[in-house]
Image (cartoon, rainbow, N blue to C red; front, side, top):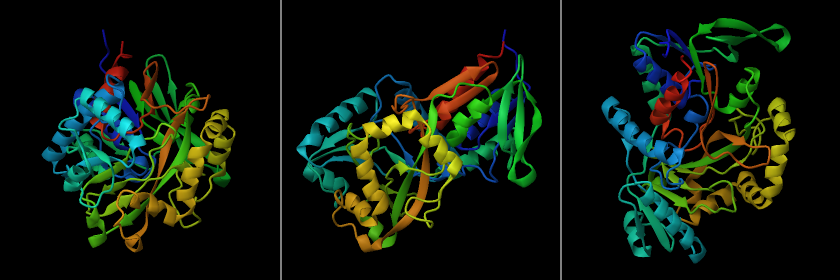
Length: 417
């Protein structure tokens, strides 16, 4: 017989943590749900630093957890956006092959999309793709008319309001240092400023159930809470460039390259934003800090020596680096040269006006990595007693957030016996 929780804690106010807290508040309507967020607002990290794409589920292995959660998640997200007035634009997407070498890979993606039940996907020849995107260049394209864009920060704020309306509480500026999983409860410990820049811990209470969705800090929080160290988070930043006004009109929706299995990251693509601007990017390059979003200190940003030391001291990173020298050279080129970055986008849209393109935001990806250097490509959720931790939630994590929330809560309540 399962125990009904009365006090529940969720750590992390990104889109997944906020969706999980909302799901718990609705599922256990007589429980008190507290969401701990270390910043003063929700969606301050990965959720608020992405391109806003609502993925349709083109690429994922049929039958995989990612494929299932993406398709169910996008349906839930669309319904939620419509019902709650969150701006949402089903602008469509082209995945464009530019040479015959990419055609076979594109046809394989088309087969996966069909197997995953992505609606109305089609392969388009040169003329047909230009009916969708008049300025695009390529030899064959996959068209996904229901791929969309949204502002995930706005969506997360709406989920937070739902949580509070259901009786939940959001504690801002509340950094969780660790969680102690006891026999029948979990103790949450906060990190508070100490003397000379140090930090001390203070108990925030005990809970019948706790779930962490800590994103960029997920491995650190896991280790501090006595869970296994792997997979590790290695941060990679992604820069965007932005065009606004008439220069943005050369693209109507989304234009993506065909993924190359020789590279671990997708490469530069073109994405319309919900505000009407056009975003180019992101690239992917090793970040010198997990939460370093500023570009003004140099092309590769500021340094957090603790984060950098943890990355450089990890054998998995060096194995990854040795296996991906070609990819590193490609990404370094776009990281160091704005001209090279824009030129990558112009391969797909030659009429893009480079003079109207300006540096935009930067995001940092929480890339989970194994000791052998391989990247963790699926969701990772671990349990210890009544403590559940979301260790990895890669793309399409934001798209799938409402479905992930249901899945994570299902897993967590299994511990309530």
